[in-house]
Amino acid sequence: MGTELDNSLLEDILSQVRPLIGRGNVADYIPALAEVSPEHLGIAVCTTKGEIFRAGDADMRFSIQSISKVLSLTLALTRYQESEIWQRVGKEPSGQPFNSLVQLELEQGKPRNPFINPGALVVCDLLQTRLTAPKQRMLEIVRQLAGSADLNYDRHVARSEFEHSDRNAAIAYLMKSFGNFDNDVITVLHTYFHYCALRMSCEELARTFVYLANKGQPLGSEKPLIDARQARQINAMMVTSGMYDGAGEFAYRVGMPGKSGVGGGIIAVVPGEMCIAVWSPELDAAGNSLAGIAALELLAQRIGRSIF
Ligand code: DON
Image (cartoon, rainbow, N blue to C red):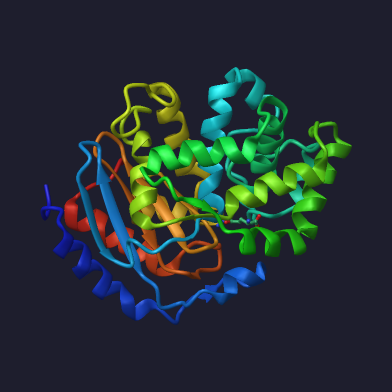
């Protein structure tokens, strides 16, 4: 089946991909993200049995950015009928950058999927309607899933995003003009930027998202967060849209559902077995961690896993 998964395998993989550092670019359209050193490199795996493997900067927290879009969708699935969500946002890959406005205008303000910025903003709008304190509620859930009571938002990153929010604000106002946005745009942007500014380590991410490998069941919890069918559906959408314009390349090279963030993190799921989280801040042209994808590709090969 492949090499056995252990810490030394992960260390070996990191040493193989480290030479790629220098070939990508740290995101700088959010100035606070550009302050992060490109030299960081970490990986962690959490199995459905709760075993943890890790290497490099696996304990160092970073801005999870768009990885939070999986959490906001999950939270929406616990508060809404599925049909109420899917009449506001689609399930198709966009074939466009994550913050593009073009398609949104052509498609009457209905975003293609919940993982591009417009889709995540609609999901945040839905949460704003049904939750009295959406930022606090998200923190409670993530702290519980990650098993870290001190996990928090990076206020510096959230403020930096807010100060450079023209494009996301334009996206939200465009959707409002089409009647696909109910709440005050500024309030929802505030919630969205905080979700993106969650600071988590690879180990915390791997623990948090292992419910996607475990039929919706979080580690050490009696209650499923979402049902097995919903977990499968999220994984399916991660395959088609989790890596934006890079989804095809990621499916080809890694062969797992994945979700990236412009902070350089990626989570990947092996259904029934494990969640993997990697972090390397330099991104490729599609906005996905360059060395992170290479590390996942190597790991998939070495342990002999792919959903295909
Ligand atoms: O809204 C934004 O542009 C960022 N807060 C999140 C973008 C992101 O992480 C896209 N992922 N690769």
